[in-house]
Image (tube, rainbow, N blue to C red; front, top):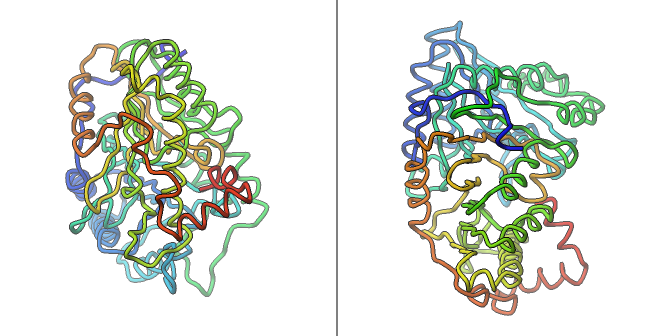
Length: 437
């Protein structure tokens, strides 16, 4: 199926790797400053912090210098209108957007996309920084930690693709299915005249998005990139390609995910892969490298139990596949680097097909969120060495597991965590929580 999947033709030199948050930030700001025709940004959020304001000011500066340039910024509607989890009194990022545009010499809209009627039911997890004829693709959103604005960083993947057709396809998708939809509204409206989307428009939005797809001039030969999008369990092309990557792999897989909580269909595919004698490398964040990890010395809140739930999911999988660990087929690498966090996603199959995506490869991503990804077909082998170099970099701060017993059990967790997880288990709520968090 994957060999017959059409894509946009790419020259070998059209793909470049940005290997850390600093390179990512530098390239993004440089591209914004030198943009001539259009800038489209899709991210979960653009935060009201130093990095977020730096990007926003860069966009305002290029718009003031060239009012004809088309700038579209898309963020999740619900995420923009609330404060950070665990932070009381935060008024939401849209306040910054509104204030900035009210003072701007030449304003532009920042649009809120309400994928579902409530944030816990699904968010805009679409990714892409499209600037003129280039696309910077990363799972990162825009804030201090993703840009390593100070000492702390959140590690992600960052790829630059020079392709006018890919840029055109991704911007056309944004216009057709997002900008023009009645459920999508401006987050920069004045409070006195603000018009929010109708509830019925939001309720039916998921149906319209479920039919969405990228349109592009396609080829089935040579090096190419296939843009993919998916929402919901049915007819989700992105989810289908993930399973096919596993099933059609002939030798090996290299998988990155921030935490281990794969959908059942993916677990079955991984198990089949191992049973057929093939190998898998999984690079997953240690619980301390999770976005929601709370160090024992800090005040605990309920959301802090989430990294421990994911760790138990990993322990359960490794225990079942311990035979594959022992014979060298399954290699689990735990990523940990001080106070920094891990946010990498994607799959490489046989060093020939590479999915770069913002999808967490979990039940929520597969059923609730609007996700996208780019499948790179390396028919000529021109990108093989670069992807291998990227993988070596990813493995730099990892520890390889040799036995499932290296992963802590519930009994060794801090008392508040143990208490919450015991209660969740008693109420049999862990299945539901893993689907929505």
